[in-house]
Amino acid sequence: MNNASDTAVDPSPPSDSDGGGDPTIKINVSHGTSHHELHLPAQSTFGDVKKLLVHKTGLDPEEQRLFFRGIEKEDKEQLHLEGVKHKSKILLLERIASKERKLEETRKHNEMSKASEAIAAVRAEVDKLSVRVTTLEVSISEGNKASEKEFLELTELLMTKLLKLDGIKAEGEVKLQRKAEVHHVQNLVDKLDSLKARNSNPFSDSGNAVTVTTQWETFDSGMENSNAPSTTPSSTGGTQDWERFD
Image (cartoon, rainbow, N blue to C red):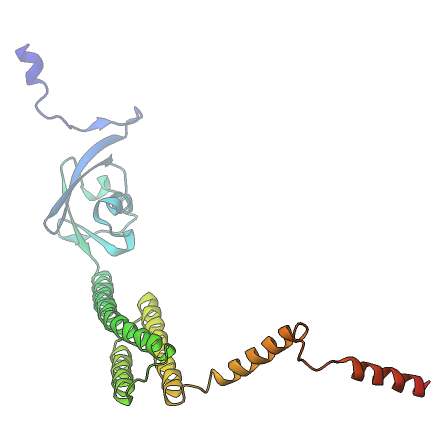
């Protein structure tokens, strides 16, 4: 039993992976503070190593630089011909251009996050003003008179929100959010203008409606109203005209 356990000192020695004499080796790849262990045939290329590192590091092959014994290796170079053996160590560095691109993407993402938060803050303020506009609309519809100061204050506050939105730099989806909120504020300003006109002349919109309603009521009740003028004479006159025409 003791002899059997002594034979298993190294759990991962070089071995034939496919039975065809192509030994599989284990190599250790250092990437910053991370260390990755790879198992692959000794005749693999450094390009093959990069492909295996994609899912471990998140770096595409073109973003990787592999160094062995201080020398950067080309993708087509084979491990065993360059002296890479079982348990050899390889250094992985990310290309500078890739780092800069990711830093730029991170910067833009952070900027858009801040812009989205700023738009949300303005939206919350506009929602409160929208409630005031709706309350004002209901009051005027009920025949109440609002002060000019109320219109002036609400309009100035809404214009301030438009200036805030204009000062928010946004791209992509966040830009669409800003555009939608600008449209919302503009609609509220237009509604205030309409309410202000109604407030100045409360009968301007209702006068015609009353007249039309009165006419329709007269028309509907005319057939039943015994005092309503008869249409028979005019009808008779019309018949006589036609007879003379014939």
